[in-house]
Length: 252
Image 1 (tube, rainbow, N blue to C red):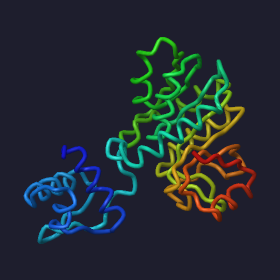
Image 2: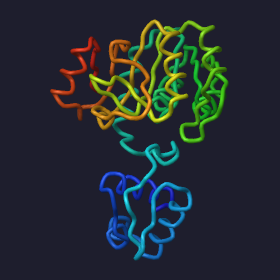
Image 3: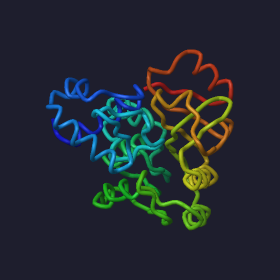
């Protein structure tokens, strides 16, 4: 198993379980305990988890994992969500895309299709699309966030206020009927709201693991959203609560 794949699995396991034993991780990953200890120490040095005595690891993972560590998690669901979301984009539309793993997947789907203008504040999406002549690309500037590869802040918001988007797709870290859409970073939440203000139609892309969670910074109430595109993991009760706020739910 490649080191990058081990890192994703270790962080996912520790996040979900709260702690992990070196021997259990070695069995899970199919590698030696020495390899696991080296990986854990590197993650500890990066501030992504906390190493304890005896080689165990506690559940003090940062609230927000960097995008490079989130890539690959629930990838099949995100691909299906992106394919379903693409059907909401009219030919020739101006499309806003915030950062995130699911919006990045949608950017790839739209690039395969072509014939749209994409306005994004995500530098990874911009890097993927700049070599696509069939896509008109507009990159929103601002302060760089290393965790999400996004450019955020007042400069981004001023630039977005000059544009009119047919549809904006935003990624979220949490979504509930009572607290609406939330994310980990306050400045990112402000920029997300700027995308929504500029758009005729607002769509949230979120796999079902995000539904029911509330994170630090509020983006908007669900009444500001037209559609939620998610996967089949959404429960009936969750769907009823979301649709009760006037949001159409599309399951991928």
